[in-house]
Length: 70
Image 1 (cartoon, helix red, strand yellow):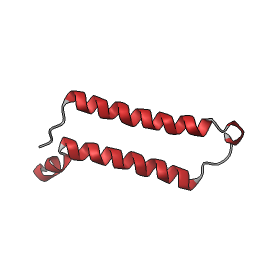
Image 2 (spheres, rainbow, N blue to C red; image 1 turned 90 degrees about the vertical axis):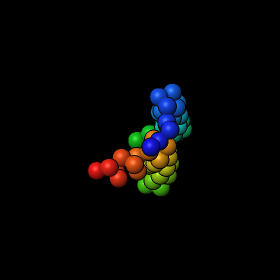
Image 3 (cartoon, one colour; image 1 turned 180 degrees about the horizontal axis):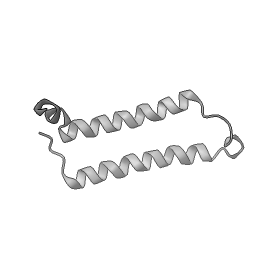
C-alpha cells in the first residue's frame, strides 16, 4: 500500500498543475508563433514529463497494489 497523505497528494497535484502552467506560459511568450502548428517534439517532451510525474504519483500512492487485488 502507498503511503501518500492527502496533503502530499494535494502538493503533487499543485506541482503538476504549476509545471503545466509554466509550459503554457513559455509557449505563449512567443506571440508571433501562436497560430503555428505545435511542434511534435515539444508536445512529446511535455507529455513525457507529465507522464513521468503521474507515474511517480501512482507509485507513491500504491497503484500497483490496487491492480494486484483485481
